Length: 169
Image 1: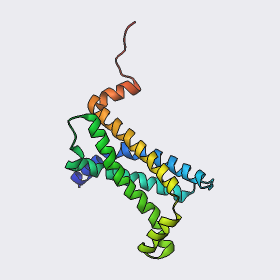
Image 2: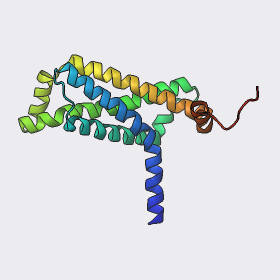
Image 3: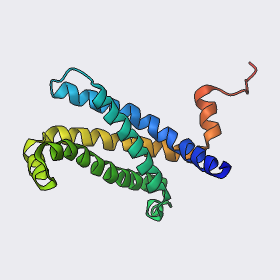
Image 4: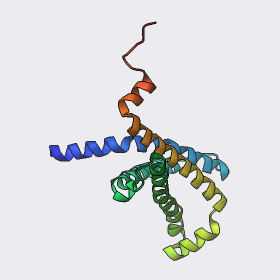
């Protein structure tokens, strides 16, 4: 039982930064979507969807990080950041499409009808703008993650929150 708890604790520790980042991002996106669609309320269902989305994307990031394909361009950090942004983006785009399809499947009864309805009912301009926001957020996440790896978490904590070392002067 102790070994299982150790594995679960490690997974939670690894997923926490991505979860917090995407929790914030998806709630902002949900709020933007509500305002754009003239639905000036942020319902519990929308908040729950944003929270579940953040958890799913955080887990998808952990899965991508575990794949050998995620480290194809490890010689130059900028290529690694762009490559990971693309991989994270593809996973997130799939999630967004499924997110749009779920209510349509329940409304229209089957997947084929839901896809046809999605093609006709979805505001593709809004979908595209939200996808751009997500890709921007994914880029910032990948950039920050790689910079923390390069500099080291202790130096980042010291730079952000101050260290115990004080200069005399």
